[in-house]
Structure formats: C-alpha cells, structure tokens
Length: 357
Image (cartoon, rainbow, N blue to C red; front, side, top):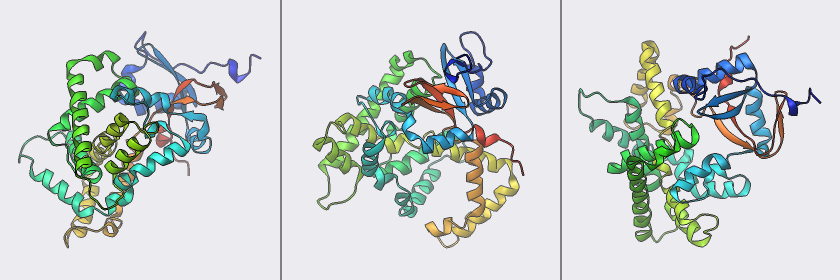
C-alpha cells in the first residue's frame, strides 16, 4: 500500500551534516518551527546533533492534545530529569488519578488563589529586592526576573527565599533542561564539577527546607505544601518517595525560571520598544498604587498590562515546543505516529499565522 500513511516519510527540514538544524534551533526556535510548518506542512522531520524527530505543528495538533490526551505521554521526557535527582516520577509525567492526586498536594502553594491572597507580601518581596540593587549598576533583565520569581514562589510555597543557593539552583535546573529537554548540550555536561557541585547544593537546600518544616510543623491542621509532601512520602512512598518529595520542595524555586521570568523579561523588552504603550502601562500602575498596595480586583482593571502580557505570550511562548511519546498509534496530517515513537509538538507555530478577516 504505497499511499498508506504508514509508508509515508515526512519531509526533512534543511540542515547541515550531523549537526542538522541545531544552529537554526539555537538562534530562533520559534521562527524555525513556524517556517518549516509553512513550507513543509503540519508534519516534518528535524535532525539535530545526530538525533532525528518528527515534528507535529498547526492549530489542529493543539486541539488534538486537549481532546485525545490518552494519545500523548510526557513520561520519557521528564523521567531523566527526576532520575538525576534520585526519584522516578513527578507531576509533569503523570496522567489521570495520579496527576490529580499530585496536584492536590501542591494546589495551596501554586494555585492562582495563593498569589491573589498574598498580593501585599508579593509586592513587598519585589520592592525589597529592587531596593537591594546598586544604583547605576548594569542588571541583566532575565537574571533579575529569575531571582524575583524564585523569591516569590519560594516564599509562597516554602516561606523561604533561596538566598545563597539561588545560583546553584539555576545552574542545576537550566543544565538539566539543556541536556534532557532542549538537547542543546551533551549528557557529558552532567559530569562536570560545576554541575555536580550545583546539584549537590540544590539537594542540600531542599533537605534543609524540608527538614526544618518537619521539625517546626505547627500543631494546627493546614494545607501546606511541605506538610503534604512529608505526609505523602511517609504514608505512601510508592506514590511519592522521599527524593521525589525533595524534588518538589524545590519546585517553587525552579518552576518559574524559564516561564514567569522569561515572560516578564520579554514584556519589559517589548514595553521599552514601544514608549507609548509603556506610558499607558505606567499610568495604570500609578493609578492602582495611588492608595498603597493594590488589591487583586484593582489589578484586573489594568487593561493595557493585560493585553501586553497576552501579546508577549503569543510572541514569546513559555513552552513553544513539547516533547512527547505516542501512547498509541495516532494519525495526524496524513502521517501515522507509531506507538512509543518520540516526537515534538510545535504548539506555538500557529501563534504566527496571519489573521484572515
């Protein structure tokens, strides 16, 4: 059956021998995936550093992920990240009841309500960190936003900022992502003294935070992340081992490094490129801060800042490419992805499609 989708091979994106398309991916991954989607169609192949992946792109695959979630698995993507720390699984790898159970452990610290109910504390943390900066000193925007984000999420989840452990956590986490998720660095990087030291320091900090909470746990019953992790790991270690609990203890410090911090940095960049919009955003900020610390309701009146955030997410998506494994055979764009095959989903490619009136 020569015309069967099982027998068809998707077109190959242009690239160099062995390194493939790694240079284009490193330079501007979103532009690369969007360009290949427009030129090659919704399914194409990409080679990078000796590896080859099929890429699925287009609005249809985004909808398919929502309606046929049983066809996609993230287990293999995140398993080496957690294994490096000593565990076997984490929330991003789980589906169904186990995923829901894990979310319940973490909801108090990472829900929208956690941020809304602590606006004064968040504003205080940001103000304090800004005041610590030396006047006139050059400040890298992304690193600045990473530090603020880690401080806020760390306090909301664990009531503690990372302090002197911040650089180690950043090195540990970003190296893991570069090796196992984006594949921009070889696995040998994980054996370097710099990474091994950062990893040891990250685990040291996680143990410190976790054990201090256990020893000073308040008598009253409350929905606290560290208490929930401690209870789950002691009562059901098959569901959550001690090492996995320590890994999630660090979630507040690494979860926003490549998400909230990046979006905030790009928002600042775009605002500085558009002085008229920046002026409107500043006027909104002055208005909501006029009577002191704003409320969650007053933030909702900041229309300019809201649309700037939305446009920033379109132009600079948090996770523009997802790695997945087929949990079953699935057909997309005239091709079949076989069960257990690894592939990429360029879920942000539709962000750059022209709008047709």
